[in-house]
Length: 365
Ligand code: SAM
Image 1: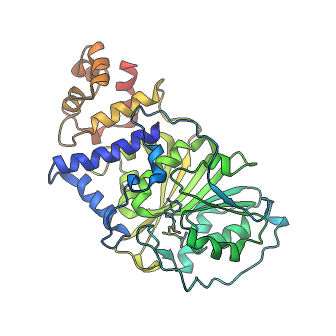
Image 2: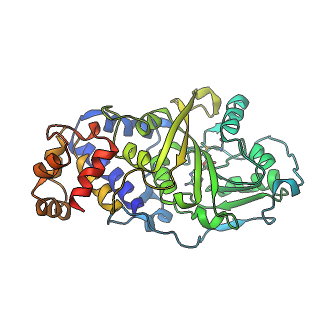
Image 3: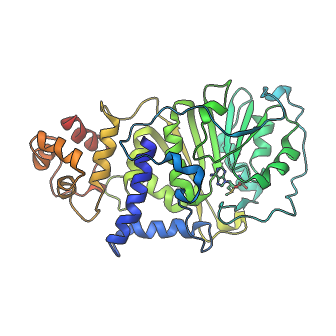
């Protein structure tokens, strides 16, 4: 249900944006996400796609265990270590009939230097499994298949599947799953492996939702190398006090160590997007960075704290959802809880550290 919290939060932000006309960078950034690769295309709401609908929950923030995957496996051969693969090299020529879809954020990597830099950052090993979200025409996949023990590629666009199978289908370490990564059970798809690393040049219009999905499935992910819109990377890595800091920054910081690697100009893609991209490494922490008993409650507190960015943390907690307000009142009210957590009542949510959010939560658990 951490998934739901993210999505609720994202939906909430869109709603708030409308209410808080003209307010701060949140709204601007969302516009940025809409623009990012869509060239004027409207941001794809998860609700647009029926396959996403079952992921919408309305309760707390604890990540649920994921069930067996219902997706279409198109696996011509069992996953074997790379050394047993025939390593067939097939022409890189993209399909002449496939037209890039704006809706699916299809800006394919065409700059070989950028491709090499991403692969070097990942450094796939012959004894590990690598998941790739959105292999597209195989720009990254080719080197993954060559170097990794097993490659599990998750591609939503069925029109790309034949081309991918033509290029990599004879490699025994390659498996393709035609599915929506937002609802794919990664832990199931990587079997018999129990952990994997993941790489993706993400469709930016769903980048926040994918991040949510990755964090939900962190039990089988050790590291993630992602290409994202530069602004999203700035949000993820924003330190306390930065206006870019928001709910997403806190969630990612709590579960991962982040490292921004490098920027990528629009010219590295075809078609050329309107914005710059950045590559980021997320190392999944073995456990959440702060000691809270109830992680779902932590995410409710953070969500309430960021509800209206112009308001102080005190005022936001005073107008928290009823269940949370009841808990806070039970412990003396918002100002008492904040004082006990040693958080100045006049501060705004973006100035708080993950530890301070945790202290507030611990006091009402
Ligand atoms: N990896 C390729 C590259 O770097 O050239 C393609 C990257 S392109 C930006 C994004 C890819 O993600 C496309 O192939 C697109 O079809 C795929 N995609 C979009 N939405 C998806 C989803 N929900 N699940 C899985 N793949 C998705």
